[in-house]
Length: 465
Image (cartoon, rainbow, N blue to C red; front, side, top):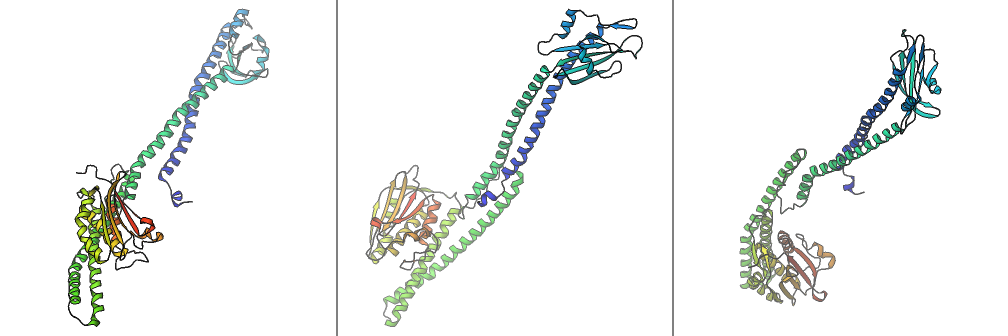
């Protein structure tokens, strides 16, 4: 299991609290809807039975001590009429004698006081029914009670229950689905600024330490983001101080190193004891390496300084003209090394910092001169190729083994077979400047598998002059 999978998710936590709550509340709401819809329907059906009971009460006739139920066949048929359910009734006198209706129904009678009503479910002849019982005073004495019973099968009631249940389920679904969707949408929308801030933080590099935009970030996270911005500000200040120190140190070292190089060269040119010649050569070589290292440190500090501030102005630069203007600086070192330096230059317009692009190109050529070896051929190519611009410096020297190429762009790292007195900063400067310009650097084998080809691919200028 990956570490990301083990880490708690704020979105998952919020949804795990919200969705179970909805899963509990929605059924409760459905039950409430079911009860609200069912109770009035059942009450209406009970009122219909009550009306039949009241009608029978009005038909009871008391003559002396004897009660009768004068009811015609048509009236009895009207009382029993029902399109869905079967309705039966029974009326008994105070002595329990059946005055009219269905005799089997009297067994379900409940003892009631005069004027009382009773509603309950019962079973009549093996069939479930809804039974209404009503006690009425018969005659002069309130203790003399006639009982009226009206029963109806429960088909309409079952239909009412099904309709109420269906309405409750549909109402719950109509409530649950939008609520669940809104909960997910609300959580995602609330966390979107946090995700954007996280993406912005992830895109930061040591060269680009800008403050993270906290607009729209929830207040619970805003404090953390402000602390992050304060940390980035401190890092930016520390990085600026480090660059300033490196640049100042390199600048201060450049002059004495240049003096040492010149003095050593003059001592070598003047008559001197032969025994001192190796020491003077070592002194001159050390001064050359120190001067070159100081120059590279200055270039690195300049590249990092511009990388920190992406608002620095850029301009359209033609790499062909840049290579042609600097060719004289590379020809003499190449001739001294016994190398053939050639150019294949086509228009190649990019947008960037001319000074930094000059450093990139210069470091590529000087790296090839330093490591290609005597008799090598070095070719500088600029061209527009397949919607991008390519700057290629290729040599046919000993090259770099494939397993070592991944580390060529790191600072102070050189190949194990590298000759010469380099410091391992040249290609690191190239990589940093390329990254600043949105470019990529590829280290490949040269023509025929010999030497090293460094291919820098840059985005073209949108509107070259």
